[in-house]
Amino acid sequence: MTATQPHIEWMEAIAGQLRERFGEQVLAVEQAYDFPIIVVEKAAIINVLAFLKDDSEMGFSFLTTLCGMHIPDNKGQEFGMVYQLHNMPLNRRIRIKFFMGENDLDVPSATILWPTANWMERQEYDFFGFNFVGHPDLRRILNMDEMNYFPMRKQYPLEDLGKHDKDDAKFGR
Image 1 (tube, rainbow, N blue to C red):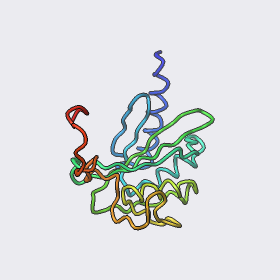
Image 2: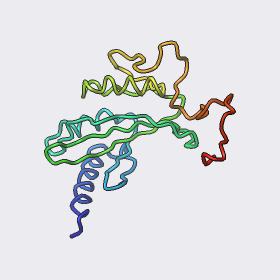
Image 3: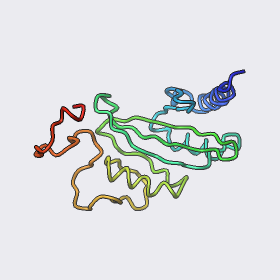
Image 4: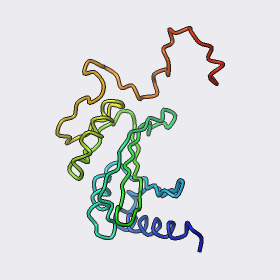
């Protein structure tokens, strides 16, 4: 038995239980750096998270983080959300992802499961423009209220195009 075999076995067991419970709403099961990643339909996200949190066999009771993604070349699914959960007693972590189009950035709020999702969701609203439906206080948390754009979207240049004080060739561009 290899060192990663037990890891693969519990990952496959979790994926099997999710597929059994949620069927075709589980779109993909991946592994990156010994980290299980489950891709689900956006409509199923709260139910999947609640199952992983509340089911005694799953035990993923700690929301480590949630973060947004913007992948402009992924047409029709340009935006995504990632939830990283932790089962503390067994020291197991899992990521749950879903993707959505740029015209449908409504996301159900996870604050009904984890009150700590409050500030995390506010950050992703602030930087990407996700609308967390059901959030108790969705407003900017780090940027100025006057900002009329979402700075982590990849539609903005990395640097001020008006600057001429450096040679980009020396920075690998």
